[in-house]
Length: 336
Image (tube, rainbow, N blue to C red; front, side, top):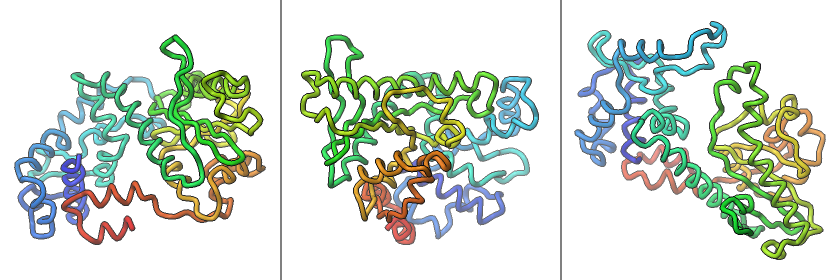
């Protein structure tokens, strides 16, 4: 993974510096030595050829494989072949990167997800394992909280599915039930097709149900949940791997599944920020936002930003930057 990120950084820098046109040998110039010293040239070449480069004919072929019948105004919301392989070879001689920004997207969580799902050998296993990894990552972020006790998923019955939400966070005056979902936005949701509401519900109905069920078990003082006070307010949060901007907004909240427990959505990016709140507790902030009027006008994350709280640096993200052996000090400074 470190090599993958390093190669993307090299390509992005080379493409931006040369108006999107460059050659491989020129990329290995002096300013890339910190990367080249940590990643063998053959590894760089293998990653570029195997993950980043396509041909004009292949890009056209991929485009023609897309479903027909989309309105022209909606095409920008559909899959772009350059998202999968943003570097084109064989057009004018040098390598061409029409949209350098797609190089960064290629190594984003969404880019890695779709790269893996494009591989028929392990795409089913990857999506399953990604769910476990994302759940664990959400737990790591919650572990940054210093004013709460974090409990992992609790089994309570004999059936395979008899489990609580992924994480239960105990604050002094609040119990927060958190469900992690690595699901991506589907095409009907992105394009707002006639069955978009049904598709949106399908994405989140299980998470809402798990939160409601866990809240019920706590209130009924099921033997496996007696450690949690039944008279403490209970709120829910679904953390998604990528943002669902419209779904989390007030105009679309009515289309999400209904629940007896107040539930909001936030992305992993939002959570990485929330756990760094400095001048209050996350429990107080979350309860305030959920009970305020801004959430009905702005949506959860915007209401949280308007709360006036200050947020610090995320230690997990800082440490992730620092483990890259080839990274320049200027990039470490950006992460500090």
